[in-house]
Length: 168
Image (cartoon, rainbow, N blue to C red; front, side):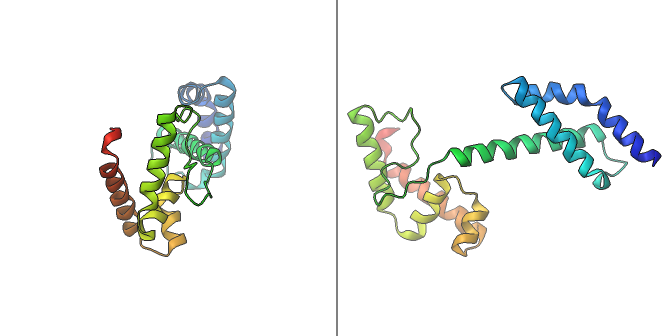
């Protein structure tokens, strides 16, 4: 019980440091406060996993950093629009994609055509990767080893760069 009290006291003592770190990671004070709260809850939930000879402050800050990264990835994934058109014309292009110019729409069409020219073994993992899926998710959905998915995406990217050298 005394160990639990010191654990909580140490965590309370780090709140100012956590807020400072959260402000560096996030763009707003409100988001920083949410991150500190999420971190505090996660640390308290995982108190039993803490080992006494580990740097407490480092452990807590690592939890905060991981929460921030996971939240960021979740936001990016939810903001990604998966293009289900046959020619992949809208291949997850951002608002600042340059499509407002004729040259920009020509480039997007050429990129889509280049990707469509790939065989399915390269096109499917590459388009899933561009859509925001993790390598492990792609491997699981395709029933392939993780290394195979990574190499196919790598080779598809290299092939696309070679096909579109004019845009470099």
